[in-house]
Image (cartoon, rainbow, N blue to C red):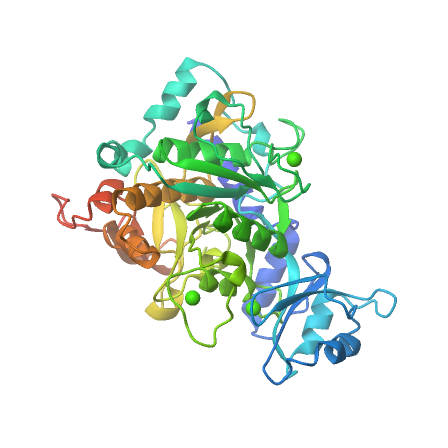
Length: 471
Ligand SMILES: [Ca+2]
Ligand SMILES: [Ca+2]
Ligand SMILES: [Ca+2]
């Protein structure tokens, strides 16, 4: 009883901490957003005084003029893609306007195709979460046994799946807080990674248990990939600092690095809400499109990926108890309708129900709203922690790496599938959860992961009907 209450308490914390601002401010902003569709120029959630700008064909030669008009330093810090996205610094000698105010001023400028602050990304667990004060932080054989045998194995039929495939030959990049590479559980499972926070080749987590609240997150996530796909390789990429914060450009750097060092699957347990407008919010979407299976003429291309493809797995967020629990969290909500290389993941509980903390899309229009495509175990999940420890935690950050691991099983078993087909395989072979959720007043359309059906591709692998309404 105490335990379940404690878990509920933790879930609440996770919910209110799902983005990095005080819960009060977040609630206020949600209410504001609900009231009108007006453009909100809210407090800036930006990593730096930087704006990411794409020019239109008409504005292609106008970068200097654009920089002069909006008081940006004329020389870009850097650029990516073709046509390029420029990373521009605001000239603080000329203006005291915030990045969001400058983005707002760019609205309607026909020379500008994309304008987006180099905004922060945060763990979907949030930096308010007392991560290292959680329960079950411990070390020992009993705990290790709990890690190996936990409920997720049975729920997603992992043992049966691993009898078919163990993920051999597939590398999964983990974009997170880093890793404790010395944990015995990772022996033989790691490939070299990189630290994009401190710009060095050692992506070791920085901080200490009980002092830094997000310390251990990346190690926990990596442990779930090791559990799900024991013969896959893990590439630890540190993009979140000791407070659990990164930014869009750093994510871009890590994606390009991952693609060029042999990763085909990328796990992202961070996000940001779309409520900072006016913004294009297309920077990561363009990158994802640039490394998927489909070449669309005229679309921005990213030669930086060297034609490598990436399957992206992203946590849907822990906003289940904010409003109707359906607010979009990006990059998970980049999930489009077709030809996608993105799996957006919500969380289930031991009782095989939607976790109260998990964000779930409200599907009004199938084509626009069905962005949480998969759910997987994410409640009270046991995994590795720095210092050889194991511990339990809850969040869509825990569900995502389980899906990433299963994607590795599928790719290893059927290397002939392209990314879109792999994504479809995982979605279409799961339990179909299509129903209204009265407690949230939403309509849920998602697929509960079944690892065995995913690796075998056998849609008849269930004895029972595959439609369920778990509330
Ligand atoms: Ca380092
Ligand atoms: Ca772009
Ligand atoms: Ca594309």
